[in-house]
Amino acid sequence: MTVVYFDSPMSDDERRERLFAGDIFVYSPTPHSMALVAFAREMAETAFAPHFPPDAQHHLAGPDYVRVLADLKPTFINHARSAELVRGLLADLGAEPGQTYFDVPRLRTMTSDYLNAGLTLQFESHRDTWFSAPMSQVNFWMPVYEVEEANVMAFHPRYFSTGVRNSSREYNYAQWVAHGRTAAAQQVEIETRRQPGAEEQIEREPDLRVITPPGGILIFSGAQLHTTVPNTSGRTRFSIDFRAVNRRDVQARAGARNVDSECTGTTLGDFLRASDLTPLPAELIRSYDTVPAA
Image (cartoon, rainbow, N blue to C red; front, top):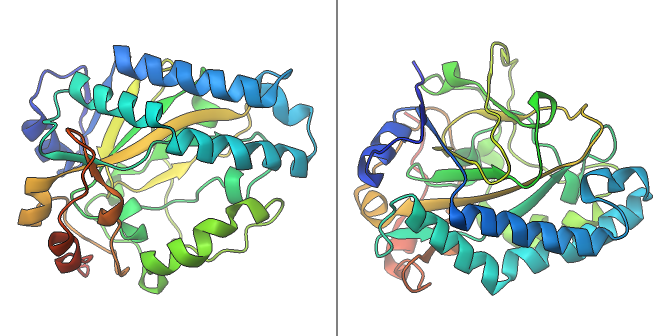
């Protein structure tokens, strides 16, 4: 059974324990989540001017649209203000700054019946742990503009404790960083990069979809099986997501149970401590690798 907690007063330690058991948490907008959304809107509206970002897909040819994203997305991801606001958001939600490590916040764009490759890729059913994420990873997601049932993500809770045959055994994170990630802007009409995916039919319904206002925060385990809903809303969905781990969990190999991930490498080198932006110790990263599925 998956429980959805709304504005829970649980401590971060209690919350992570429930997340690793398959539950999902939803929070009302916080001061820092709203500031992060406002910052993303400012950047997006400048980049797509004179068009309103969710409607810009109707005014730009595919290559022109992707060129805007090729500049907008890395600028947002690497901006010091983005990291500063994520640190504040984590504090808003009670995470311990000295033990919490996060990766860069990503600005996502899911167009409606338009592009689906590279910088606009809409992910099929997957777990983040298929992509070398640690089992202790916690995902944070929030919409930048209004969202609806037809353009959010769908969770498939029945698979949290049930494995799915998949191609994660072919995925190595270091190789993806060296060759796959850098090719995103060249994928305009067709996605040619090999990424982990299900190798069997998944029962996608019934599913669970959470609608929050802009800046509302959805938190779930990196082991949750989820799918980008095919966007038929007529507008591009803009959202922000980032990931976090607690150092104690990483050291103890705590987290969700690995039911089917067989990838190699680890994303832990991407995480920075919320208190001072230092990375996890190199020896801890070197000693860590994705544990084969049970």
